Amino acid sequence: MSESVREFLELMREVFRVNGYEVRNDEVFDFLAVNEKEELGIVILERIGPKELSRIKRLDGKILLITPGRIPENVREEIERSVYEIWDRERLEREIGRAILKELFGEEEIEERGNYVKLCVSEQDAMWICRSLFGRCDGAFLRYVPFWIYEYEVRGFREHDGEVIKISGGGTGALNAVTGENYWINMKGAERSEKAEGEVLQPEIDYERALREVKKRIKERHVVRRNFNRVVRDSLISEVRKFHPEDEEIELEMELLYIPVWEVRYRDRRIELNGYNGEPFEEIQAKDVEFI
Image 1 (spheres, rainbow, N blue to C red):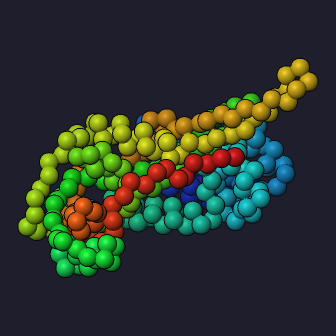
Image 2 (image 1 turned 90 degrees about the vertical axis):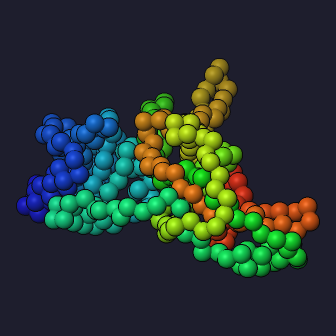
Image 3 (image 1 turned 30 degrees about the horizontal axis):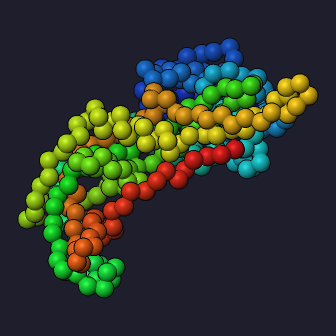
């Protein structure tokens, strides 16, 4: 092991310590990073060739591969079948920078704000949008609707017929706490303020129920389908297996916010508009199903 790689290894150990992991020596991996949720086997490679690729494929467990180099896409696809996660040069730049800031200044302080999202779309704006959709508008009515706003990350893997199937992804969403409708939108960083004049609806869905519903939607969105072939009595049988993330493989942050919603109408037609950004609310079906 070269001196630069040795220094890099020690730097990585420190990055995991700063982020709350216990770092342990190991005979198989460069080190283990352990916390209450997971045990990661850390593999650090300066470069990745056929020999290194073969070694990775023989390893078991949650493998985090770290390399200071950039990984070609054709090689990355093969590696992703065998490891839990990859930190390449681009990811390392973020993780090291975040760890340094955390060590120097501590956790980022989050400003306390109210639970009402700022109303940025006026009644006139809402009616103009209505006219652009329907040709005319009979009026606009403002409500504050409770939503469970969430941000999530999925990290998991399965083994089947000697292959490792990776389940990963992330995103944001909003679950209507009255109707249960889900929207794959990002309201996490929405500005908050005192509420304007308007009816305030009360939530019908509590935190625990929302948690179950959101995880159900995430599982549907991030299902991985794989084709497997097997020979039975000289016949080739093809089957499709589905792999869903488990609850413990979904990291989820969720809070209740009241979003201003304009209901605009023309005759018997109506549509609800997000009062923060003017976008229409419509339930979006899961699109990110991966089929390999």
